[in-house]
Length: 310
Image (tube, rainbow, N blue to C red; front, side, top):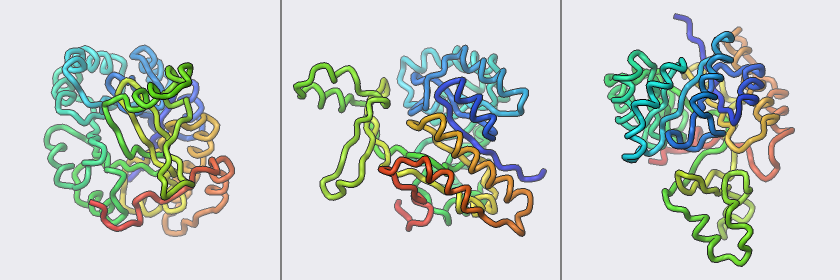
């Protein structure tokens, strides 16, 4: 079978999903906060079904995020939720907890399963372990460098997914840290507003120019990276390695920003796949992203060209 890379995106709404499909996205990860972690937006099961109906005619895939930390309450409703996802026609389930795998085996047999354990997805042996238990895709930790990504892609039996654009999570706690802090402030009217749209951030004393977005939701407190990964200029290295899925994380970004990013990566992928031997990166693809990039957030290569951090 001919290698066909996938451009994977997130969406905060059905409107954004439609617009990013038109911009060139091949697949989307969506879901609801009870089962999924750090989602761009909340999608009820009815909205997920609508997304599937909109995507199917265009051969676009819809993946449901069930990568949250599953407690007993969530597990109690997991069977019915997974069954509803299967009925809605989603193409895959993104999971990190074996409880999701067990529910899928019974209530969504044949469903593609994408294993995503955040920062612990670090080696091909673990990938193959989950492959033998039904996983079809392995979502790599964002802390791996290019050498490790290439080695895993060449040694794993599963499809490999990596994040190529957007912010990343650097800290998570189930505790309501923002709420606890706000409780000690004098502006009582600020207390109810602490979600990802509030615009809060934290800073380090030694790096005052870097701002780390912080917010709180039903899953606890999240601190995000101060910069955005941007691999569009070096995307050919991942394509040469046979990485199956290239994810654009549109979390906490506007629809307009995400449209421009998706178009840039679409052009890059298509140009490379049309003629790998004579491929040449066009600066205008990166320039389009730079024009809309928040000046307070640097574009970086993440960990792709850093030494081993584990």
